[in-house]
Each structure stands twice: as C-alpha cells, then as structure tokens.
Length: 308
Image 1: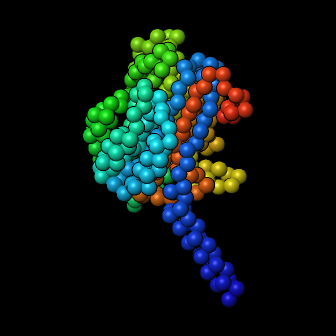
Image 2: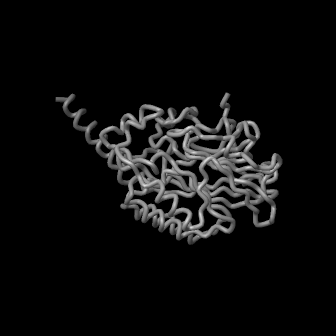
Image 3: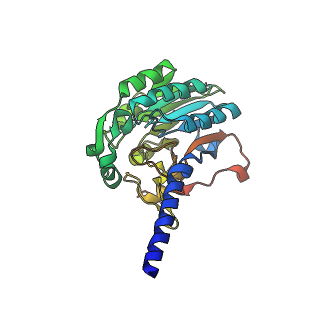
C-alpha cells in the first residue's frame, strides 16, 4: 500500500513538473544584458540585440508580445538574427511582424538555421535530441528561400558564408561575418572572411556554435551563436543535459573567451512544438552593449572557454 502511495505521489509531482515546463517556463521571457569593453575588443561602441531560435509556427503571440515590450523600451544599433526563426511555414507571418518592429540604426543581419530549412517530426524528435547530425528527424521542408526573401524585404542582410562591412555611429568601420549552420552544412570560413581587410575588426555570427574553433582562429573580436537553447532542460549541478553540439555542455549558455575572441551563447526565444518544454533555462534575448571606458563594476564576467 505504501508503495502505491509513493507511486501516486511521484506521478503527481511529475505531472506538475511537466505542466510547469510546458505551460510556465517556456513563457518566462527575459532580457539578458551583456556589458563589454569596446576598447579591449577593438570594436566601436555598439548596442546589439541578438535574437535566435524563435521557432515560429503560427501560434506565437507570447513571444511577439515580449518582443514588442523590448522594442518599446529601447533602440539598438544592430539586430543580429542567428537562425531557427521558423519551425513551420505558418511562422513566416510572425517573422514579418518581428522585422517590422525593429529599426536598428546601423542595420539587421541574419543567418539561417537547420529548422529554417526543414521541420522536426514529433515522432522522431528523440533522434534530434540524442544525435549530433540528425537530418533523419526532419519530416518535411520549410520555406527557407521565402524566409530569406522576407528578411531582405525588411532590409536585413542574409549572410551565407559571407560578410558585410558596416560603419558604426561614430563612423568607425567593422565587419560582420555570417556562417552557414554547421549542424546541417559545411560552412566555408574562407569565403566568409574573403575580401576583408586584415586589420578590420570582425563580429562573427552563426547558428551552431560548432564553428567556434574556426571563428576564434580567424581572430573574430566577438561572436554570437544560438542552436543550443542553453540546453533547454538544465539540472542542478549537472547543467545542460543536451546541446546537440560538439562544444562542451558547460558552454551551452553564457559569455566566454577563447584566445582573443569573446563569444555569447543565447538560450533562444522558443522551442520546437515537437519538444515543447524548458526547465531552469528561461527563453531570452541578449542585449550586448559595447561601451567606451565602462565602469568596471558593470562589466559582465567572462569565463574562459578552455576549448582545447
């Protein structure tokens, strides 16, 4: 009888936890602020909004309301979109709405992620979670070309192993290099850096952090990644359970340094409807502020990545 009681109690706790993960935690959106010293990075002062992994699928009102609030509170120099904006074709309308919200002073730049090309099968989601390369888990195409057209219509540059040279608000030049998603493609790092002046400071962006070794070797000053969802489910002491990446699980979320490169991994805004839960890993956007002579007390701690 006691065993039955424990089973019932355990089942009840598990049901409550699952309800929290699906109904509550997924909508506990936050703005994560990262303050960096522009001078030590060799970059001009910038205020960057980093959006990633929205997984728009047509029922996206909570995310859109959150982003409207972000837009109402502040303006940005750069908008960086690092992929998996779509989970299905029905999400294109939400992408249009987001792009219409923001008017960054310098510009918007985007790379695509694997989910922008194909949607995940709920029946095969375990393959996606447990293997690194898991195209078998995708069940049909997504309109990546339509997404790219949508981005361009709204003035965003879509970078596929390419770069763009920009001018900061103080007139200083810098470049943004965007790489294709290493989870499903073989990025061409040489092409992304082709034509850039050797002394031009570069900000890198990619969906998957699996290119971090290449980005650091190229001397990017700053890099932004998505894909890991911060682990999506994090456990006390253990941290991220799954990242679907070659980087160590301890690097699934946060601000890190390897060599002369600082890189930022973002929890992302959404989840795939096939894997609709989060635990101890709230959805977020990152606001990265590169300041001239910042107060040391305001600087974000940067952890050493120890990538090997």
